[in-house]
Image (cartoon, rainbow, N blue to C red; front, side, top):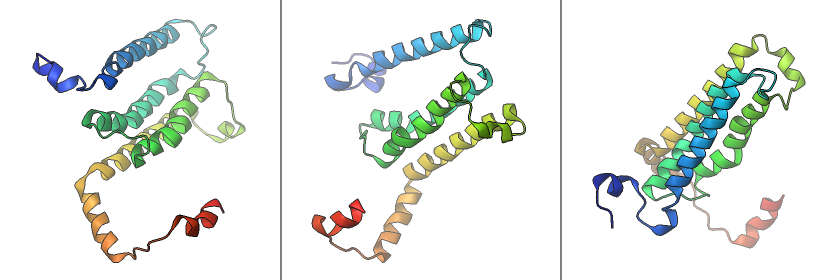
Length: 172
């Protein structure tokens, strides 16, 4: 089916995911084009009043998406994988979309007045978020953590509970 080494290495093997690469490329081009239009326009037409946050928000978005892309490339992508679920249910909306909303000026919370040097501390916060999530992902994917988990699992009790036993505490 595939003729070159590049096609064998990077293109998906099944038909269900064959369109994902072109869609991602088109999305990246549209995003880069829109970002360049925002950078090249003057401030009166620019909806982003705090442009200094955009590269840092983009960094956080890339770091958050990287484990999902890695798992997809390895063929182990699952929406309920712990790292993927944490990324797309919390980290991506809170830190990537939240920083885009903050950069756009749509949200100006009162506590921003308490930040002494906004242009230094907000990007630094996004760098810390990116480093923290990268560390979480790296720790999750390394075998060192898996080995520690297996050792701890041997010491912990392993109760067998039925669904009706945990229904009320789960709802509570």
